[in-house]
Amino acid sequence: MSTAIDRFQAGQRNVQRLLDVFSNQLRAFARGRTPDMLLMHDIVDCLNRYAAIGDDAYEGELIDALTQADDRFAPARLVLTTEHEAIIELGERCLALIEDMIGSIVVSRSALLTPARRYLRIYQEHLRRERSYLQRHRHRSTDDTAPDRPYRPLPRDPLEEFTDLCERITQTVEHLETDEFGLSVCAACGSDATSNGNAQTLPLGS
Image (tube, rainbow, N blue to C red; front, side, top):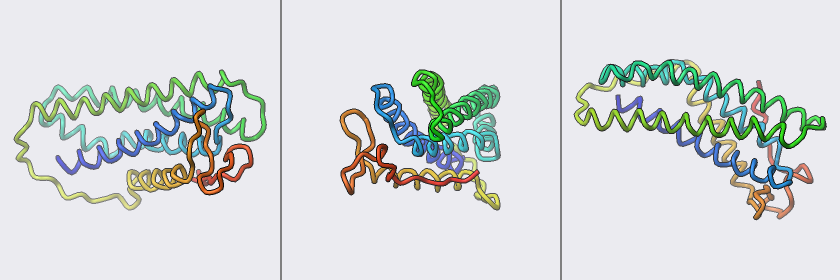
């Protein structure tokens, strides 16, 4: 049980880091500045990958363990699955708009800000709900004597793949500083990373 929770919480921490960066980029965009659209694309793509693996054995194992400890957790699977679907749908819409902007297609700020802000809000609420499930479980089960099943990763563990992608994005963000408007600036050269196209980007593939 603790193994499933530890992996679950590690994924949550990575997601929260990406959401914080995405929020900063949206604030810059709302203030009339142009954020690093390639970085925004990579972040949303990575966040959607995480939501897409939410229903596999990784999260399913956790919900199974919680339900075994308290059957009132049974509805959690449907709730989380519904939220995953909403997150992925909104994320795909945001990705399409960001790709249009990268391709120099004129897109109004409100056209992107409206779904992007909703995407951020729903994702943050989703994380809070997951944390609430874990907190409720801790209050109800302080003596978890069930032995952990050995963790056997899939041939290509989707959670480990997500963690690797998140780390690569974080390394890119650490190369950037943020000015008072929330605009990414290259820390090494001091230049505007969005105006000269020199910001590091992450080709995450399909």
